[in-house]
Length: 122
Image (cartoon, rainbow, N blue to C red; front, side, top):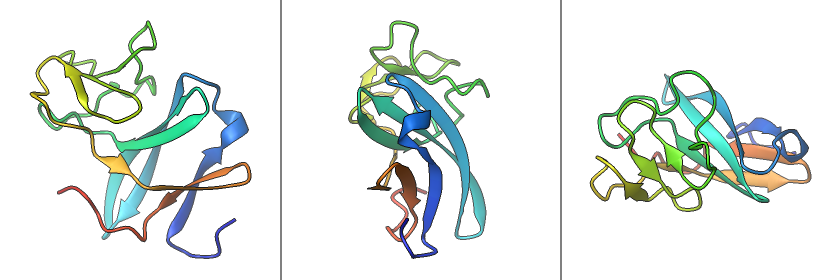
């Protein structure tokens, strides 16, 4: 486990099956934020839970960010879709914007949010 207070454990990799997602909350600069972690067949990515179309959460508090076919991530309000591996807009009203990627540190089974990296979003 990283010995720095800037690392926050999200979950263990064995707790997140392939093509599944895990929502989490964190604090940055004193502000509570929502993120989500996905397992894209063994590759883990985390994004801020904010649709680039209108700035709302993608999942309606269900914790499921994938479209039913598991090929893309979807905003359940307006249907904007994003590529799981990059967060880039795949279609819909996101107009070429990408989800904000959250930095991860993986050590053993632990998947950590790395809060030492400057905030890439406003």
